[in-house]
Length: 404
Image (cartoon, one colour):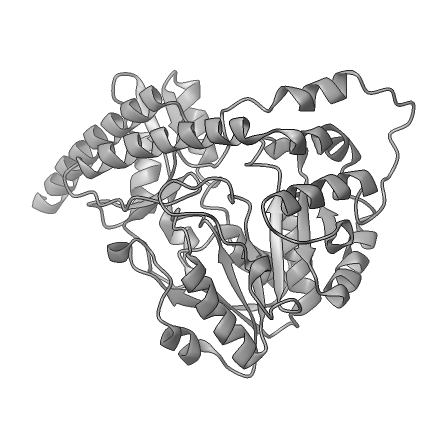
């Protein structure tokens, strides 16, 4: 039998999706599953997206340019200018989701065997992209006790070697919901300029701010024009995950030139998604205010409910629509699987993402889960109650097993 590649074997499974078979089996048995595992917004994709598709008069669905449709890039740039970020359409490379944008950035800027520093817990796919590029992730630990704030500059200095080429953050953060301040970004600026590093910043949750503000984009860091690469996407902003339209945004012309080679190799990003999404950038303040208000309410509901459960600790996120909570269990992977396989409360159970998959450090985050508060408030309350009852039952079973 032909051998599978070592890279394939090392590629991590997604903590967000790996328990899907157990959720499917629970549903087959008639159990309702509250999906808190994945950041799939339930808010409607705005009407202009569907109107554009319905009224589309096309005879042939053609390839678009490898860097994206010109008019779409113009609209994207105008949106940036409207929020105080001075960029032009030629600073954008349109990609198949934000995932491809980050993959292109890594492949364009980092050699095999080189290192990228990422605070952990981190979006799990960052580890996957690094694995695919034979890039070593150097994690910097953050703490649930202070809400996963940026670690001290000394921690970064200790991690930097001659192989270090970039720092990557997500702001606001997935999975923690932490919102990095301008001061924290200025600290990263200092490190990157001192050591001549790229700064990759995933800003796909830019609008989702609840406590602090206004949002400060890495593209506005002075003197960092050649260092900053921003990852963006319409998936969360417009509840259009399936359109698969992202963007790599930078003022570094060489990075764009090299990334375009990867773009040409995959031919083009999806045409229909760009065409349908173009008018979404005309949505005004009322649209953004409404979705932020809804998610802030959901955050308040789930965080309060989680922190009322004995033994659960959940910091209050400043942005995005995620929270990381520690549970009174030794192994959240086992617990999350048990919740789907063996437990239900009033005909329902909860699917969560075990947080160990969001850490690069082995054995880290073993008692934590990521919660995506993308369900309506009543469903979040019901899910929290289900989790509370599940934890009680799990503790009873654990005590019985220890007594044997």
